[in-house]
Image (tube, rainbow, N blue to C red):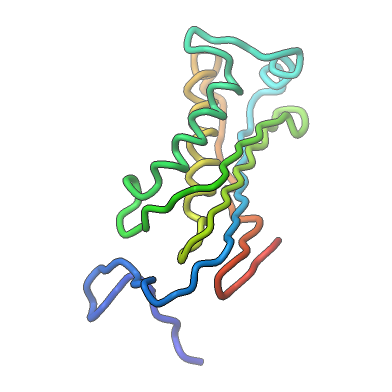
Length: 158
């Protein structure tokens, strides 16, 4: 079996992938991450939007996730700047002590939006952490993964 090659190297030097010959298609990606917290914190969040000095926790994190997805190319080297046609971030309590963050990104272009979805979910989760750290540092962000990718050469869904 031949070892797969990394796409961001040309003659052993980092390089942006050339997508100029690729056809534009509709592309979508959905990413998820989770935040494990003490159950008392998710109980408080479940009772209604918990407001911190920085604003309502989930609403602020949703805005941060959208902003993060839009800024992906300035955060990750060699990531293409894209025009996002749609970005949504959903945050919910997924059980005692567990918060789930989903980020969906849609675009019509020559390159995928997986990194934008992963970045949006991550930034939203980090914002929840930032806003709740005055209550507890006992939080763990993890399980960040791509759930769905459509458009381009390879569709993927988990």
